Image (cartoon, rainbow, N blue to C red; front, side, top):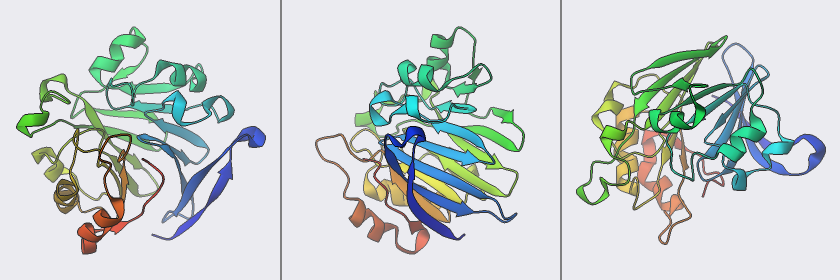
Length: 241
């Protein structure tokens, strides 16, 4: 899967954000844009997808309006209505977990783990469970709240897994043909480095982007994580602390 990397300037050239371009089998490409923490964007055939937009992570007012917005769960560093209001237009499809959905008064797709949506031509979104399993962490992301991760499938033949906040869980074993995985490494709330390795071993993505790995007292050493993942996947480190 070839890769080109460069900076792209947001409209008005107010600010630039790191991007990766992923060449697809049909000759088109995906553009992955990295803002901060858990906020990313995906552009595909002119469609703009934003994941967990949070206003402090990007100048969303200067960026293209959203065709699709994905929200994994209701924590403040993932769900920010101010950022969503800057990005949404009349036709924007908002997909979110059931807790975040309460803020939209029905004007969204409420995604439960196992649900599937087709918010645009050529794009399918599958909701995946996301929760803590370690006894000391169960209060952060309880299973019964039904937070979500997402698998975004593009008809050009690429699948991207976005973990949301989770630890390694049995549901990951059902994921297949994942080309790119964004896996959280935000200890102590989500995964420790060895847990990221465990998750990668279950999912087997071609490319791993560790994300959501900072803004805590003990941020993950992502360079050491790269060594731990070793031959399981290509690890690409981007500014997602």
